[in-house]
Image (cartoon, rainbow, N blue to C red; front, side, top):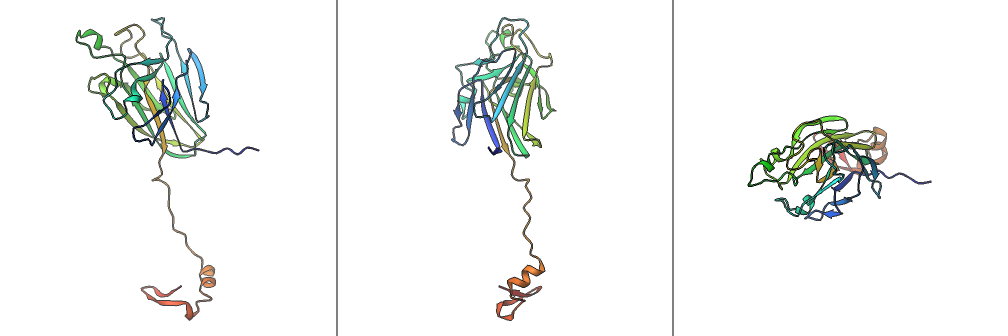
Length: 239
């Protein structure tokens, strides 16, 4: 009989190979599988899964990964060379998690809609909504806008989440807003570079152990004077 071991974290390098953070504290599991217009994929270690739904209606583009050779201005540029993209709905699931409070860290960089000296190519707007555990946590999220209008700029968003049934759902959803064809057809929908989810330990109650009268009586040999250490503000102190 196998025993299910619950976990308290998972990290994903969306659209790319396994990557370690610069401080070597986080290993982001690879997420470079090709996802079709209706795909559900479970990672090899069964720590997380991803689903993609949608088809780029104005383009023959069937790619589910965006790639760039230009790095983001961050201490971990390797996290932003690729991103997972979707024309409509992109979901990530944390599997087998301990119940409790978590911090969900989402990392983005706009590597497709680039700043351009010619002007019009940089006017594209990628806008989508972010849901966590079915709750809308950010409406009309625009990566470039969050980065003060810059491409290849790392953007990090942290959200609290509560896990009560041993799984977590992160949903990025395109609601038809923003542009669709700048700089090329099919440039819209969710895009994400990395995910890191960790359990929040500060909220766990730490209650001191209290002894019953019977336990104290037994430990001090019925409050034997030989076990007395001295007098305190509330009476005798026994060893």
